[in-house]
Image (cartoon, rainbow, N blue to C red):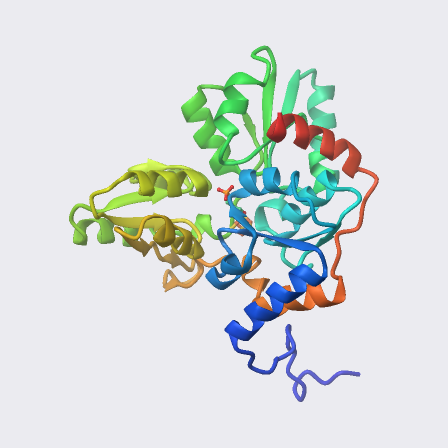
Length: 334
Ligand code: 13P
Ligand code: SF4
């Protein structure tokens, strides 16, 4: 039996140091040799964004995934994103550098619990459609009527969900509450949240705003209401980038989203200064580095290289992908 006093439990093997520049060269060579395209979300490390063929928010990456021509896709992001790329490309190999890269929002809404709740609502005679944030598993997507991202949620809710239906919105209660506010449509909200956006410190944000005259607060709609109330601009990651790039006057932005977002913001709008809003630990009240998503952080250059080399870990096709693809295609690509 393993004696935990003698053997430390290590989550990851401790690797030898490899120069990021060498890894980037190796990835470039492997991409060609393996006929692969790399997609990377704005929340992964900047060096991975640099080797990617496409970077973007969840909406743009889903659209990019649908038009990739190579036989292999490496999705540097989290599991639900790679699943979406696979359902849009049944015959392609879709690799995720680390299969453990999950998402607290996706985890908060298991498919069996959603199916049971939908059944209960139907039994009560409620006439509703289910709108799911893209941060859900493919199994959950297959149970829904619409899939939205931070980039198209308002438009789908306002223009596409029939007015005579109630809306069950899953799994992000904060994005859902924000959508109720901006669209005026009532919703039944699932009680999920993002572990990163949930922990921004309102006190630190207000202090930073006061001590940085002229600063502008930009916040992701996954943040709770108290953070959104002090924001000057609310939008998903792509909208944030467009907004900052549209302002010419050098400005200090306080950024309330995952801290790696600073990298594409600095690239798109180098005239500005971007300051990450700190997170706060709920048990002690101390500020922390929890404005980094631990799931996105599972992506490393070495793992991108390794998955290209080995052709795994791979997203396996599941029977419910067909139904999920129908909903994703109708919601995001048409
Ligand atoms: P967007 O990039 O679509 O705004 O989403 C943020 C996010 O949390 C991805 O997991
Ligand atoms: Fe999920 Fe939040 Fe991480 Fe995005 S930042 S992948 S919503 S846990």
